[in-house]
Length: 443
Image (cartoon, rainbow, N blue to C red; front, side, top):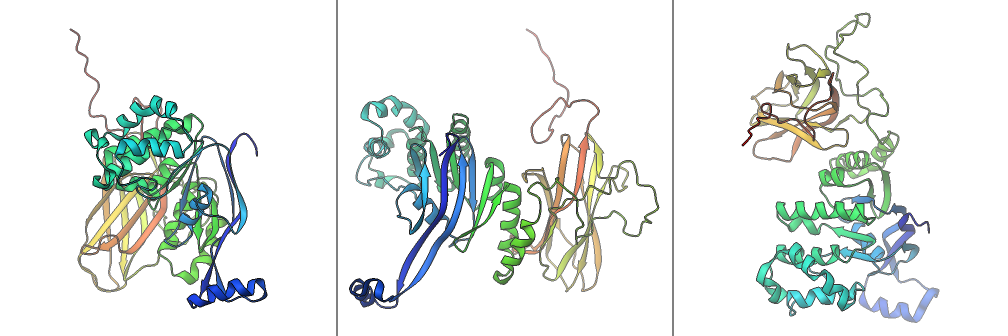
């Protein structure tokens, strides 16, 4: 295996025999290969990928897709039915909350126990102990039995041990979801330091923003098979679309998404979602200097509607004119056009802006009007500027006030806008929150 590769998985699979009756398991031992008394269930089948040192790989998929099975095979807690796993160096793993801890031992005793299981000598553990305890930050509870710990305290200690053994491959399976925001921030900052030092990281989470923010590549598992391996933006967008689609359409949708480029700015292609500022504009009209008709994201998605849908979206400049090329600090609006397919009330209307990696920069949601079937209306969401130079993608959704998260209709990357500046901006980050010029005071 190349020195740059930390993990190589080749045609990996895990099959479980399913018996209709317990006695069949005993009879199978007598019959051997001459007769099969079970049904094979492939929890994972024919999965292959590589992960380089200093890179983070995110894995997404619905419950039962094979994510946990894959991680256990990589960590060696399960034996594969077929295929192979090659890991270059030491593995650190957080597969289940508190796994590897003896509940009767104190936290300190479990630190030494876990470190020994991970291959550290007592001298090496002694050298890392202060850093481990400082990172876990559970105070005097370190001398108490682990069975008295809260779930947050247990994951703090578990992550602190795993992260400080300097693993070549660190596997994290949803373990950070139980920590508070401050601890999660500390964990992800430490993961970035490990990456810079060459540690490869395998991250399983249902949070697409975490995949987009922290991962260099991503995998989509479905039905125990690897269905997509690519850029986090493409994989998470596909995953979100699958979650809202009926099972019989998954193969069709995967084929559609697999044909698209991994970066939504790589190419421009026609979209079924209408993003024209004015669909009645004659083709012979000269385009406005602040509107680029070719700026149409190829990653545009429109989910199935349920009684109301977003028909069209426009980007408007400070004068209320269609414009998707904006100057730095220029106010703008997003105008959403809706059509009701059924009578509606208690609506909540939302929009959001994401950057090219899919991280949401900002958004708004407001109450919508009551409307009758066939009625059309529009809502404008106003922004005062603050976006730094770059390309941004517009999305939006509709839901009932009493059912947040259950979308009546949702669009992703329905249109794009570009912010530019004549001179380099004085701020940096994801957006500009500068209130005034810096004030200088000298003693």
